[in-house]
Image (spheres, rainbow, N blue to C red):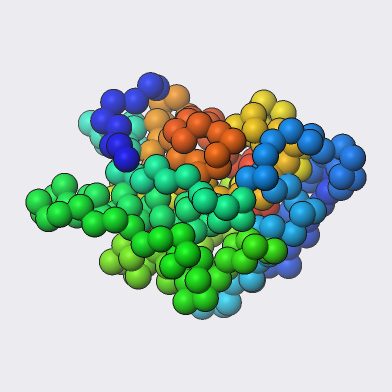
Length: 270
């Protein structure tokens, strides 16, 4: 657990049948082209883990669009105010996942732990430990399984984070054709919104290079959830906590790399 107060500065085509969902090209759909590097914590598209998704309902599309509009207005006002800081971070947990398929619950747990830490810090109340992976991955919440991991499902992700972070604001956003900019807007709005609201991001891509992946452990492809707890707009980087035991817990990734790596899925923000 930490709160950083000073910071340093597509080829398989996945066609998603909703207008807010992107078409992204990847290097190849041939398993032989993917790096074998990594551990059991790493699952690449084709393994069936963390690949499932549920399309947004019309109501969910409208709700996310309304939140995105708020985010756009916020960023516009922030840009016009030269006194505003160009970076920000929030509290975050630093749990490592206990199984290879539990990155979804672990990412949620890290975000929730940050919310709990914020409450304790602000109100002087005792620090409460976030719910376990098994609770968050259970049928009431993310419904994670050993065979299919955690689906990118708005109903489940929103309920999980909103229940434990005491908000009704978390929304799931799919990647767009302008995802680098759209993701930046949503992440900054979430981090700056108050109440210590970090972001869950769903990495989903095949083979990648250093100008694309967020971490070299994912050069061979990945379907995996991480948490974003900050940004530096001057340097164009996000601050990430990763539950994968094959990576450092804390690291940085360029805006573009994070957008490229998540465009075929998206983020959960508020």
